[in-house]
Amino acid sequence: MRIGVCDDQKEIREMIMDKVKMLYPKEEVVPYQSGQEVLDALRLPDILFLDIQMPEMDGMETARKLRGRDRRVVIIFVTVTGDYVFQSFDVGAFHYLVKPFADRKFAEVLQNAVRKLKERTRESLDRERSLPSLMVTAKGKHFSIPLEDIVYAEVFNRKIILHTMEDDIEYYGKMKELERLAGEDFYRPHRAYLVNFNFIRKYDASTIYLKKGQAFIAKQNYRDFVKCYLRFHQKKGRG
Image 1 (cartoon, rainbow, N blue to C red):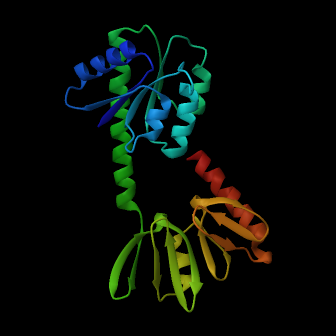
Image 2: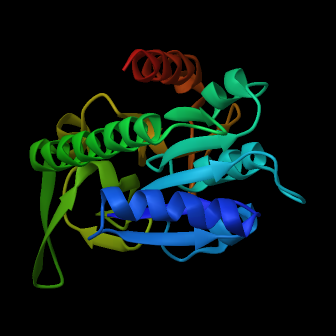
Image 3: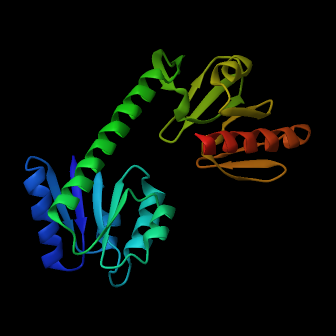
C-alpha cells in the first residue's frame, strides 16, 4: 500500500507523514510538494492526503485532474477551512479533515480509508474472477480475452478483429456469436461493427468515436443505438 501526503508546507507535510508512519510503519509513505507533482508521478498513491489551499494548482483542481486519470485513489482532503466540503463530494473525496485535528480523529479517518481500499481491492478481484472471457485462436496461438477489454470488434476480410487498448487480434469467427456472448455492455450499430459502450467518447448520426478507433452506425439503427446507450448510462448510474 502506498500512502501519499501532498502539502506545500514542509512542516505540515512531515507532521502528517509522521502520523501515518506511527499507524502503518510497514507501508510506503510518499511526500508531494504540489498537485502537479502528484499528477506527474508514474505510480499514484492508493490513499492521498491532499491539501486544498496550495499555490498554482489547488487541491480541488488536482483532485479533478487526478480523477480523470484514476478514480480509485482514496482522497482525504486536509485544509484549515470547511468552505470546500461540498465541492469535495464532486471529486469523490473519502473524507475532509479540518486543521488542526486530533490524533484520534486522524487515526479513525486513515483506518477507515485503509478498510475502504481493501474492500475495493477485494471487489475488484471478485469482479475479475467473474468476468467472462473470449477464447480465440490466432496465428496458431490461443488467447483468453476478457470481454471488458474489447473496445470494439469489426469484420474485415472474413475475419473478426478485436481491438483492445493495447492490441488488435484477428481470428476466424462469426460476429453474431460474439454479439450473443458479449452481452448488454455491447451494441452492434452496423453489420460490420460491435462496440463496447464503456469506451464511447462521443457519437453523431453516422459514426461512434471510441477511446481507440471508430465505428459506423447504419442509418436504420441510430435511434435504437441512442436508446440503448442512454439505458446503459442509466443502469451504470444506479450501480
